[in-house]
Image (cartoon, rainbow, N blue to C red; front, side):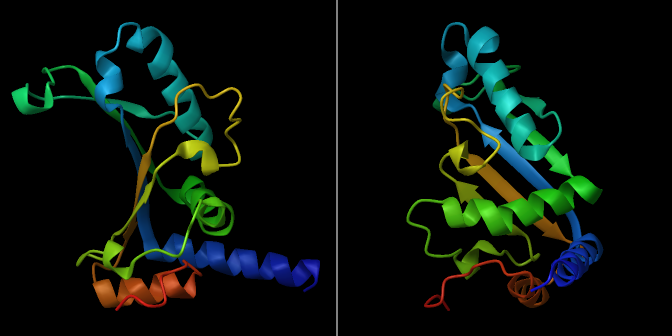
Length: 176
């Protein structure tokens, strides 16, 4: 392929993503790490920084709305981080996810088609954030998982699956 053909293909993909997706939501939970001493001074800034590198914008801190004894969480305690991507940031993130990040995941055999819910939302879970090329493993002291939700404009599972396949999202072959 020539450079012009590659640029034309990338512009076509960006146009499809812009017209087809409403948003991409990237979240992470801090879990038990939030109960450690020095969490807000040491660990939280590291997670916010890394998630900012990954998403291209600063993450929003999410706090518990009420105390739940079973989870040992208290009202107001930090439980996770979230960022919502739209527009150009969404397009860039999707292209990096589909072409760079998913192939770098260890033992990756494809995404289960059941990860697409009835509303067409594709939910992807990554066990460690180090698969993103923006993250330097030597500088990142705390490894955390990510949940990525890709929300289409059309809320239909069959249409969304066809869209994801057209955009080269790797689904498992043997799954029904």
